[in-house]
Length: 167
Image (cartoon, rainbow, N blue to C red; front, side):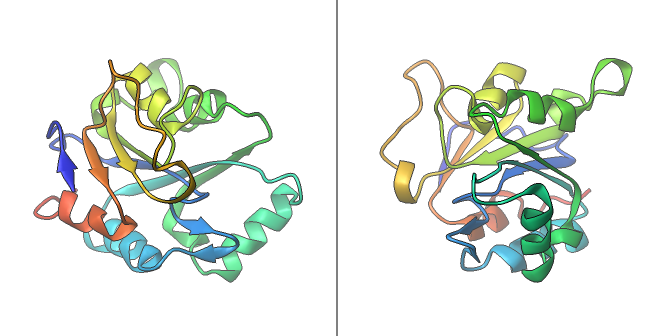
């Protein structure tokens, strides 16, 4: 795990990407379910999911998949988009105006650092950013002017990041 900046004290919400962050090819990544359980029930974080809907799945099928994998109940809110950008979905998860979750209460976890994806939204909104540097996009590093607060190679490393923290 590589730490650039530690700004966890105010974090209450974790916004997680689904594809290649929690699951891949229809299966959970090793340790994902246990980490989600610990973050929600032991540490007390509120988890939200933002995901681009694969063209072969409807929203209903994607939700059924999450229920069958027994991870649906870990999330306060799950939103899908068919757009290539997650900005709108992440903004809706955050809320707007007086009801918006303050940026210092959000950590964003994702596997892509390119424009329109979770980490880009996190940088734009000045949240804590956690890059899961693994798999298909591990070589697509962040722009030179942006660095994630944390870089991990396994979802299970979230335990180390939030060790000693609870809400």
